[in-house]
Length: 313
Image 1 (cartoon, rainbow, N blue to C red):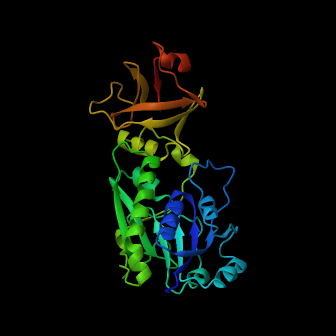
Image 2: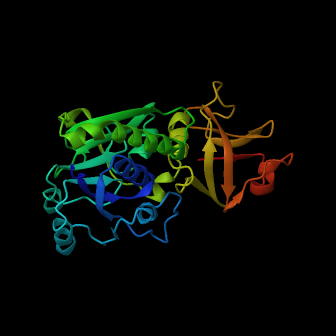
């Protein structure tokens, strides 16, 4: 009887859950799962890799540093055929990558070589991309730079938020892994080298990066709003009455705004923002100082800001 291939899996988040499930469905013997402890300061809106591993009695560890020599030694003793990394948040160093007999493979949430690095879904939306996806590639010392063995594209619709696109990317990752895994396990894959010159590398983002500059174009502001919409921290700007968070918008209207400068205003009880290029954004969900901005009064802006319009510069 042929022995099942063994794997050590580094995983977190929904992509980690679904890709771990694919390995198990294909009969891979997962001998150890390495994941993260949830950060109490972070909004945990995603599924738990540790919980899935527990259902299958797979041992789980949560080291602070996966590259710690003690952790490397523990995993080396398992002599895995494969290492997989599915949305694990730490770079795996050379000692870990050298452990598996049949390679170390990472699932990345973009169509490599575009959007290598951190938060690729958010960056793709910020840049107005109409497509992204998931890529399974060989892990090398340089992040997200190894040869590609599988990709799956998904569309980004003009009003999609990062949450909606991330859900599509999760499915894309599952599809890509499920499709290529039989060939990978059989040793029949041939990684396609990346041309890194045709792609780009992106860094991490902080909550402050969601600050809106209303002097920018309506399209750029719309892309920012949907790229950081909940469960991410949200786009925002500050007023004397408190911080305003813009949680959802629609693509810019075809007609120009009436003010000739960035301005928040109502039209037929709809909240709108004229932006730096004169185009107008409909704002669907807005909070002032943590409370929803009501729109049911005849003069809703006047209630909060003392005027019928609010200049945004």
